Image (cartoon, rainbow, N blue to C red):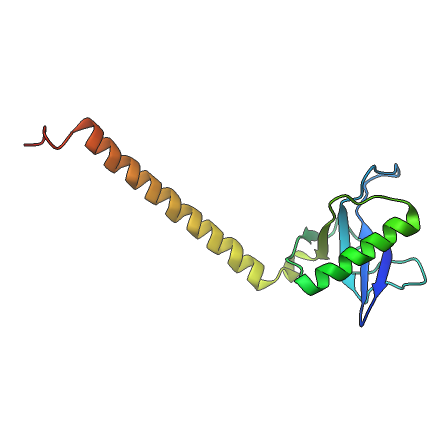
Length: 140
């Protein structure tokens, strides 16, 4: 595995997601975590990475400051292992019950906005149909 860590004040750990033993052309999906790997040794223990099928994988918004460090770690992994990551995407591994409340609230709010937008669109279609099929001159 091509895991790597970039050390600043904290150790920013990255490991590519790869299904199967064959090498990929580009490694764009990366597991991330802080202070959960060792810079000098192999081993990635961020979240529940050893049990990929027993927990969910979520994509969290990474803070802009942290994103730069994770990208540096990916660049170092590219140089160290001779791999390419054209457009790295970062994922954190978490158990389903560890999904943050903020993520659940954002999903509920997005669904709420979708339904309100859909109902508003349907209302406008009904109004447009009334004016199209029954012009104001015919209603008198």
